[in-house]
Image (cartoon, rainbow, N blue to C red; front, side):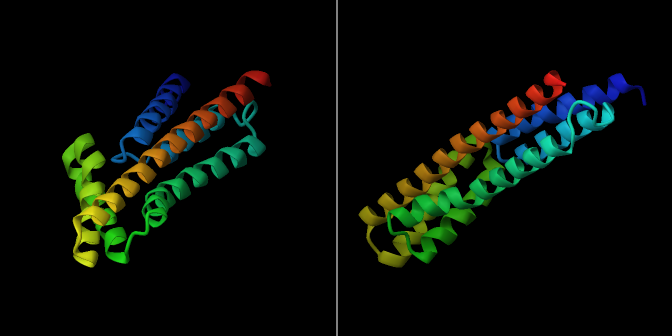
Length: 161
C-alpha cells in the first residue's frame, strides 16, 4: 500500500478517535493512539520514537481510567447506594443505543431508579442521579483534555525532530 494511504488511515483513526472521545460509541483514545502509532510506523519511528509512544500509551490508559472512575466518583460523592451505581452503569449501556441524547440522559435515569429502589425517596434519588451525571460530564471534559494533550504531544514530537 502506498504511504499516502497509510497516512490517510492514520489521520482518519486520529480524527475518529477525537470524535469518539465525545461519543462513547467509539473507543476514542484507543483510536487516537492507534492512528499515532501507525503514523510513527510509517515514518520508521524516526520522528516519533518509543519515549513519545510510551507517553501516549500512558495517556491512553489514563483516559480509560477516567472513563471508568468519573461517574462512580460523582455518584459516590453524593452518597449513592450500590443499586444507584448499578443503575448508572446499566443506564450508560442502554443509552448507547439511543445516540447522544441517550448517552446524556440514561445514566442519570439509571442512577435515579437504582437509588429510588434502594431508598424509596425521590429527592435523594434525584440528587444521586445529578451527581452521577455531573461526574460523567466532568469525566468527559477530562477525557477531551487528555486526548487533545495526546494530539499535542504527537504533533510536537513529529515536528521537533
